[in-house]
Image 1: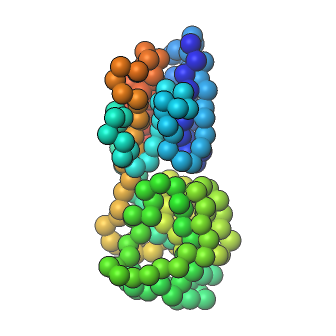
Image 2 (image 1 turned 30 degrees about the vertical axis):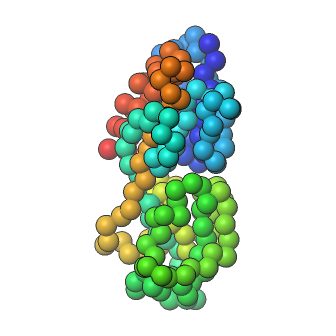
Length: 201
């Protein structure tokens, strides 16, 4: 049969897609359809069998299987820090241009002090676009480490507050209520959870 998997493009590309060839070889009778979007999938209305999400689902009727966590990192291009100065604490973020990934759940992980007002000069519900704006020197942002670790290693971005404990986002497979789960979805989640968990460990 056909299995429809919904998820944000950047998280599917980095965390899920590397394991898809193994799944398709193991289950040659299942045809996989990826539905890439950056807002949470309505599994029933959109006829998706499984959703792959960063951040726990708020819907109480859904079944969520956590398979790990990804740290989120605050970073900026070197030229931003040269122009505005490196922030010494969270309060300093108010004086530096900030770029916001509006993918659900991301806003809550900015290390802002209570009452602090940060103005976001650019917003997008796609982490990859925000990453490109960061590398171009437009401002600071906070993104999952897997999305920017290559830029940090290459010196295109500088991690901020590196000695502090990192916030993290849970990685989840989300299924509709139990009576609607199809067998192909269960096989997919069982197979992929193990591999995603091992890759994140």
